[in-house]
Image (cartoon, rainbow, N blue to C red; front, side, top):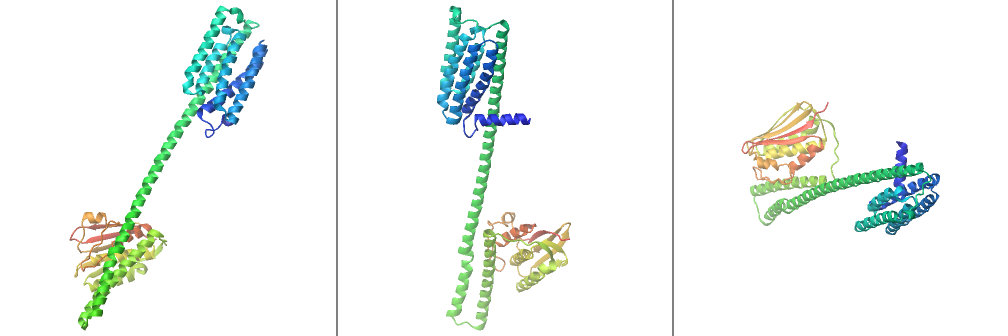
Length: 444
């Protein structure tokens, strides 16, 4: 097997690579090499069986074909060498017919092989011409031998030499045909594989282009969303702050009025800072990415202060925030990300729960997961709204006390939860509140 592999590599080097030459040129080089090998065999063989002139003719042909191979393979003169090769081949076979016993010799068989090989390399528009020329030469030589048999003498010294010559010619023809057909099939299979590989590469490239287009569409959508937030959601509260300050500056307000205005101003300022904070966090995740620092964290260390702060906020809206948590549960999380997720979920629950309502925060371990559940008895939401809740398509909604959001809080919750190896989902129906579930890997 190693020997055949070395021979195959040598043959490919002699005929030329696919990047250097077309299939027709490589076939011509193969034809030249096969002819050179066959003639190298015929030179001593014809001499040994008593045909010195035919042996000399074979030697002359060997030299000519070697020169033609060199000109095509190393000088790039393909078209000229093919024409010379075909013309000389026909002339030499015609001479061989006369000096190698005519129809008693193997020339007819070799001429048939010659036209087959010529058809493999000449341009398609020349094939009919070379077929006609080949037939004219053969028919003409047969007529010459028929009408002038003395012009085509029997050159075999004995009966056995003729049979050896015919047998040898037949073996050469079969071997050449075998290698020719094998070469064609191998190149056909190669071209077929190349075409299939190119088709697969094009399909893969189209897939990548489609993915890139989708990514560009997503980025463009995010850019539009960001511009919308900057143009509207931040501008509106800042305008309110300006209006409050102008009111305080231009008018003399009594203590009660001033306290009311200052209270409203404080609410607007807090909401604006909250929106700006979410906007900056989300923008940073899109531009720079986030460095997730996972580790074993205790719920008490991670969330106790966050829950207590949200209880104070809920109390101002006359909402009770109840926690039912085993604070000793350990989970695998990034503590800063986890705090942002839970703070956003509880804040949203408070936002969409009317005064006098209730928000609960529970944590329970289920197998290898810890479920953190924020549930409220607020206004709830439809299935259509749930479908777009964790995306940029989500529209910001006013809360029960006209709280204005930025539309990014739940998107941040989803992205941060998944970055920590968790999962988030919602269960809700209109007027029946909502429950947000966050599953995180439980710690050992």
